[in-house]
Image 1 (cartoon, rainbow, N blue to C red):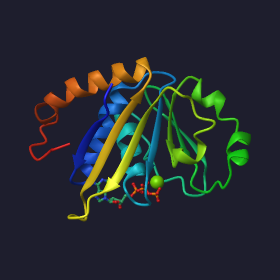
Image 2 (cartoon, rainbow, N blue to C red):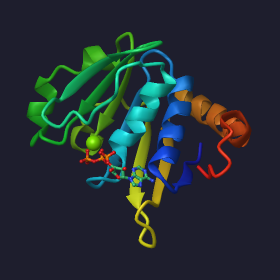
Image 3 (cartoon, rainbow, N blue to C red):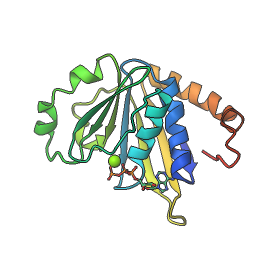
Length: 171
Ligand SMILES: Nc1ncnc2c1ncn2[C@@H]1O[C@H](COP(=O)(O)OP(=O)(O)OP(=O)(O)O)[C@@H](O)[C@H]1O
Ligand SMILES: [Mg+2]
């Protein structure tokens, strides 16, 4: 399936997209995030947490590589930013999380491409030159499960403004 590119105009819009992903997420889903510093990866994870009914706030892990949150499903928030080589990442033993009971969201996923599952939803975030709060967010599904997830996301997207009563929502 083709990738989908969305424009976000604010952190709230990015979180709204995340919350839809969180609502649609199923056990053992893997969402890989890439994008420069400050493009909003953690912001998206906060939305995913909300969509999963996580009551705690999803902080940027900064020094912590893996954080676990508890919602409808466990959310494993993994941040590879501080890891320098693939050996270090391989030593983390992330497989048990990727194939476990919850969903994994990986920031700086491009650093760990050799160890992450081939089937995944790959999300790249970019700054938009003309605006401080503009971001372009591309979602690329790899594998059947994620094609299906994208179908659902596209369907729900048509309903977003009504469902969320977010008049200015342009995600
Ligand atoms: N449209 C937007 N979407 C997301 N964040 C935005 C947007 N516009 C502005 N921001 C701001 O950009 C910052 C994004 O920070 P965030 O920690 O989510 O980025 P990050 O990609 O996780 O960075 P890092 O690479 O350091 O982990 C926040 O301060 C947020 O308020
Ligand atoms: Mg972050």
